[in-house]
Image 1 (cartoon, rainbow, N blue to C red):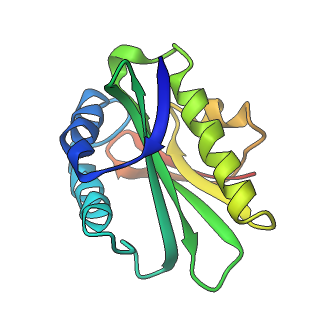
Image 2: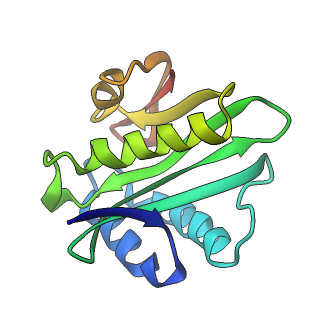
Length: 156
């Protein structure tokens, strides 16, 4: 049974393991520091980024096993929600879990912040996934995440 729920501190190691399963194709290993920083904020119930006014993080579990995680934050003083740290354990790609979690996050934003724009950044390896939901690329930065990992800035 699939369940999507709010992240708890007990989920930290599972989320880090999901990240590791996606290196080096989808994430540069150096990005782990950014994820750890984000999780530190979640674990202490603090807003992680100084540029945000609220943040949310979720996990998707199947039969109590965490297979995906992802969240978003609200940009301070702007009507904008920024998707962050969305990922599925690499052993479970192409099973629909990423779509379920992504749709959950979109629905949460639309419910809580109905007038806000939704933005995200991703790599050349996954931008086409987000295009299926209507996201459009407005900027590409070569090697932004690391050698061979280009950043695609996208907006819905």
